[in-house]
Image 1 (cartoon, rainbow over the protein chains, first blue to last red):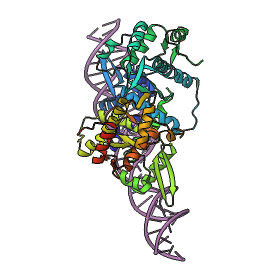
Image 2: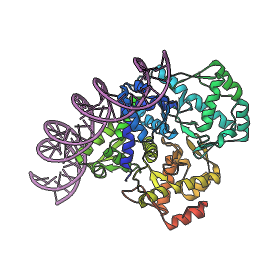
Image 3: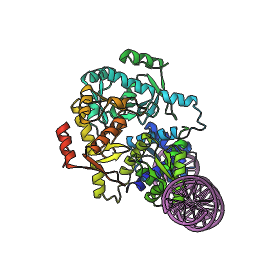
Image 4: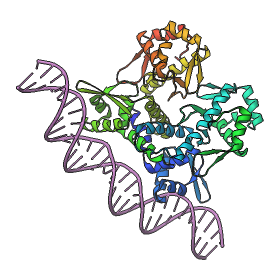
Length: 230
Length: 230
DNA sequence: ACCATACTACGATGTTAACCGAAGCGTTGT
DNA sequence: ACAACGCTTCGGTTAACATCGTAGTATGGT
């Protein structure tokens, strides 16, 4: 079992409160500056700089410089998945003071996961799409049927143009709260983006939770027959 | 983002080399005694005792006492999944001295994951089963068709008797090395157990890697048409 | 040219926790 | 009853590391 130490190294990196806060803040897939991350972590910029260097060294973060800013984002979906998996054990791990506040409620209902939609809404959409025969679940990814391609096209997402990219096309992403799969990858990102431009969903800055507008509820119901809980 | 600290707590627990070694050793789902775990971790029994207490406190491990021994095992499949997910980022994280020894080769080919089969062999079996229409992939679990139930019955696994249990029936479990799903849950465990009693597979003590016997190669090919790499 | 901003490098400090030795408790075997 | 074994608790030592203050470099704005 030579892998133990390597696992420990990676886990220890996530295991610091400041770094965990930074990673959590990046879970929506956006890129944040070093100072912003210092703020969410509750440490000074100097300290944050050190943490970010370590996370970058371990290839957990990717960095992009823009003028005098340095934007950090998660290096890939695998990082997000690992953090979600840890969330699951952290959740059931400690049955102590864990006030399920309104924010948690909102998070459960709809949130971003890296750059795609997650939560009850995301799962409801996937289930409906499978029901309609738009999607089938194969391997680690979803397959989109011809009917699905047509439906998504009329919705405003060009499936074919997403395929060529290096990025996974329609990855299955396990939902932290629902424990069911939702759509990640390029298709998941495109779907979320399209919902936003249509005004169906609104993302709030500084939070992963997503608000469904009235138009969104009606649209999801009318276009796809998706039934959302009240 | 109130969840950061909780994630950090869980990750830090996994982030200690001694504890990571213990958890790795338990990844095959067996239960080990405290002293055995002390040995694999490379620490004294006193130190191990402290670590085990913490892991138990966090509900990552379950304990069972038997005489003067205390047997520890992973508290559930979620723990195993989290560790696998961390393995993925640890893998791609550090491209330094990582000698892919023969043990790693063997692990990639066939190993146990908690209590079911993983690696190239496991993935090959799943793909073939899907191809034959025995399985379909739905949500977080697989569905077994009538044809699949019949085939498994003649193989020696009673699918129906597995359903009632509290445990997930046929969970999709993402493969660390292959990055494709294989069968976990009660069905995965039953399949592995049946392969062992038939003499198709041999598990080695103290290692997660699994050996395929000649009978196993022939049997998998003959019964299911599974093609294994040389 | 000047200053403000964003970030990084270095050094000092303080806290945390892993570790082991010694000793204690409970169980098993003779 | 006694010894052996498995495991846990306690105390003290040591090493690692997160943190911040000071100081430095680079970029952007005026």
